[in-house]
Image (cartoon, rainbow, N blue to C red; front, top):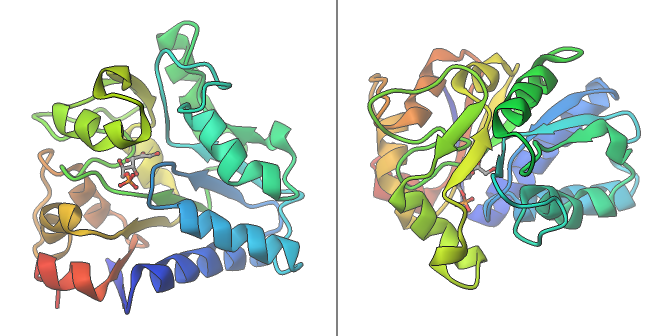
Length: 244
Ligand code: F6R
């Protein structure tokens, strides 16, 4: 596992954006796997700025997102489609027809199957951006006794619902189920790139970076199987997690 320890989260986000920029520079029609949540917002801000300054061109880039809440239309302000449009796609020169976020409404099993197809359609993602849940989840592959290989319907854990309640008016509004990419899709990416910050991620990052164990109780540990997996954390989190 390649680990980059930065001075602060701002630097982590700049480096992640530069890595994405470099992937596109090398392959203008690159396919990116993207994430939502709080962590990637400054990464997307960096990319928007780079795009405006002519440093990165998204005209031929394709994207596929990790997950979507079941029950929310793409026009719902808390849907991940809406998040991607407002935090990135509306501000860069990407063709929205080349962006895919799973559908939150309609038949969930069909929507999961469509996501799985999109992950592999025309080649796997060149880079898969990832955040990490407090419980070690990646995408919405929740910590528990088993993981699922393919894109599927996942019931969110109490810990995830609590963590995501900050984006909703009240906790009861957080959807309890989601469509998520499975472990196969994440590990198929040419380079999974996980960015994390904050004390709440310390235990999960400890499990990911301070030993060689793989456990379904911390799904991020499966990234240890990927030779190109890269993790960016700031020194504050590194210290809290006991990462040297
Ligand atoms: C989002 C996703 C989740 C988040 C994770 C961390 O698409 O798949 O795994 O990356 O819940 O969220 P934040 O960044 O809000 O701490």
